[in-house]
Length: 237
Image (cartoon, rainbow, N blue to C red; front, top):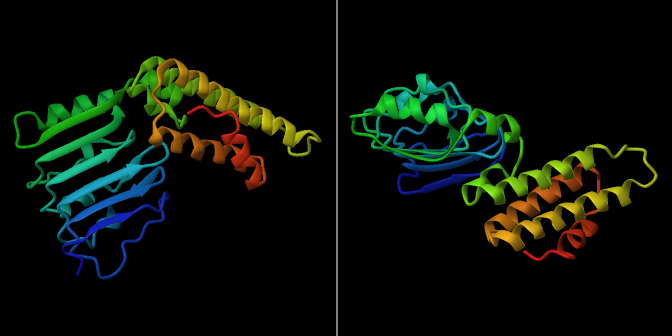
């Protein structure tokens, strides 16, 4: 079953189970947390096209040799797999396309060297230096630098300031809600400035900014009704 299905599972965690009855699915896109075991895919006997997106750092695909059981795998795309170990990438005789979106420069270099002269076309986008990752690995806006370095740096700096402000608010502080509002509205204000200057916050980035905003608000137990108004009031993107 599932032979003609384009299977998409977005659990956003490492707790992933492929539903029973879909063992013949050929095309799969999984959006997980910061880590996933390749053994999860063991039952997909006809897998040909796999896209794996890591929503959180470090982006590690464990049990990587398990991919070797998928002899029909033709296309492999890894998004934000910053923890990929190219030495453990198994031989995949049918592989023709390997795409790395968000990776370490050293990883990209190693993968290209290993597959050079073979049948696999390697595409790399967003390869980052160790220095950049050391400073921004945990920053949810880290990939915005791909559109503009200045824009991405501004967004990352805005998040860092907001996160520090949020973390500094004590749980028992009497002005906790007021402090939360200042920190969260401050993030929106800084993103306004970045967008005014660069004009790069599109629908995708706006949704990402909203998700980040909600995550920070959740850390402070801000009521949902206030979260929406704080984000929308004064937002120009």
